[in-house]
Image 1 (cartoon, one colour):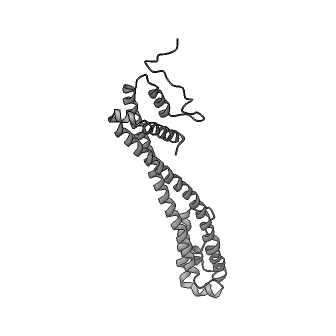
Image 2 (cartoon, rainbow, N blue to C red; image 1 turned 90 degrees about the horizontal axis):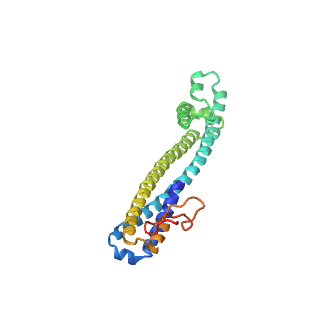
Length: 230
């Protein structure tokens, strides 16, 4: 979550905690109950979405590391031995060499996958010849399996990004919902608790603090009844 959203969630939790610790105030103002319920729901959804967002973020980092490893294995352990052997088996076959070419290390993943499949198709008719020269009998299957591993990781990373985006949108929506509920509660309390110590406590509890600042230390604007110091 963004820092501003973190602080908004902290404020919402303080505001909700203050309300639930004053059931007498809620009982005396029935219209508060619905807003407290709405606030509680928004807090729960924000917390769940934030946990999911972090899970997807960490998963994305792990998949990025895994993708780098899988790309390296596909190129170095499966494609490169085929290319090196092809040079010995068919040194004077330009058409064959065109399909059995090692892509650059930094080639885009989709291009790497396309090259791997082109290589598999090119060598499949000559599979026995490659096996005679030392490659395992299932080297084509191993090549395609390695390519599938890369492809599946890319797809999973894309799905994770989409899910993280969804969690981010949930947080954004429910932070607004929580703020709206707090504003509604504040309007009711200012009308019913004007000039009371409870109202000052509430205003402190609901305040969105800045970094390094506690809710109790935040400056409070004077109420209309209190006035300003001369």
